[in-house]
Length: 198
Image: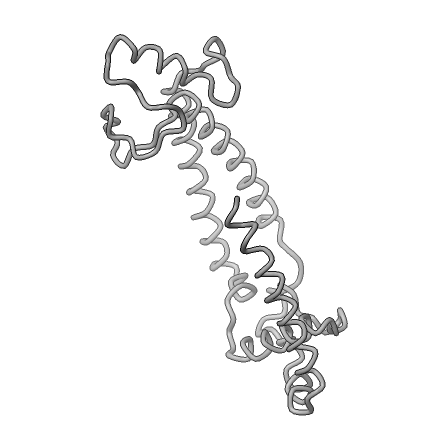
């Protein structure tokens, strides 16, 4: 938190300097010619691929969000039931590389007390604990569905030609991007009709 407090003013200072430089560049005739030549728009090679979003893209993004909610929820449940992270799948006691709770004491009689404390993560008492096996099953099953959703998305993306909306098909994208960056930083934004958004 302390490092963020030290970096934020520096980032704000860099932004102020970038805006001042961009405003100065906008007054230069060669930069004005550059912005006129590269206004920030590119004519698509397939115009039908850039109009709107098809239903399959909308449904897949909804399904992606739906699955990510379950992945996050089961991941939090796993960490709540077993607040340790391991590099291997064996979970040998004492080989964890990250613990959210205090370490397990070497005395076996006190180890039960440490296990009792593991259930208090995120304010959930031991009485409401779930089975870690069920949480892992949910997590890995939903991960598989999420990956399947991604594979289907990329297959449909390339099969329908919608990839041209995401992948530049011309080198003109780079000077146009620089032109738009100068326009936005100088607070002299291009008109909305000239912007070719994704």
